[in-house]
Image (cartoon, rainbow over all chains, first blue to last red):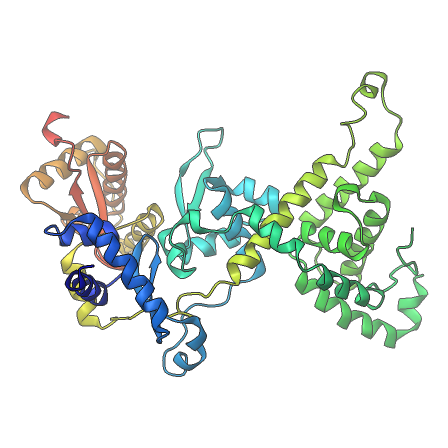
Length: 201
Length: 262
């Protein structure tokens, strides 16, 4: 373990404007071996993880960056304005479809959601979370959309592959069986008899 | 049961309250359908179209009663549900009978619902992540000085959306008065403009969008320049960069291509 190399890499990441990719680090430190660099990076990563400090070294959007731990956000937001608004369910659904199905056209997104998505796609484009990848070679030449680097940065993802797979998400849903039960108990109150009938089969 | 609403006004009040909560929750017809399926404890793969359709239509009726505009998308789904129900009631054709197993009219809807459910959950999973600028913060150096240094240091890649946006801004800057007739013997062709840009790029490494239109700032000139740039981009002869957010857009020759060959 080359501790000086670790320190050099740490200083590079610390001063970088944006996340620094492993490739870029290797380019900057061409006198070092790539394997040593990746080894040192992994070491730094675990060091910060184990340190339990206010920030950690994370890999986002294909690069390394220091970021604060989510647990402290309520303290940090006392002196730094939060600049990311919470996303609506529609926006998240649309974003999920674009992320998992890219390249995807607007019509495909709308077919899946069953509603018009023009406005949401436009606002995602403006927020740079979604980008236009090109035009599909079918009649009408519709635009095709995909997620951007900013999407990975904002959602703290290393790359698209680090998104949980749809199968994993389904598995998550299968666990909280009791939660559903709870919801069902509330149902008689919720289902107001619009036409005086309760849905009893 | 219309008298419910007309005679018992306090009841109707409760109604409003209850459903305003609900309306926020439903994010389109698929979302509403999923909710109804869950509420009735139905198996998504074997839904009772009669029950679901009735409740779905009740909901739309309610939206109308509350003077809410019912989005067309909700009506499309209502029509789909009714069509499925009517197909279930109709006897099968002779030649359809063989394929009776697969010809469950609900199949397509079930497939869409399952798929929608997946993405809805995926959206929630993504939304539950700690967001940069909200739960997580990076070490920022957003000083104007540093931002300037960054734009000197190196260009950033720009997306098509930003390029079009820059073009839109540029068009807005053109004063209305400068709109003048172009003499027919002086047509501005995209080919000429391409050559002009290429020769400029041979002289220097980078060219700014503004440089290209500086001499003659007319709508026609800007449009022709823009089209020429897009064409050059398509031919992979140039690369487009932006110095910083909302900054000037730069062009550099693509490394691989030699302009003189074209």
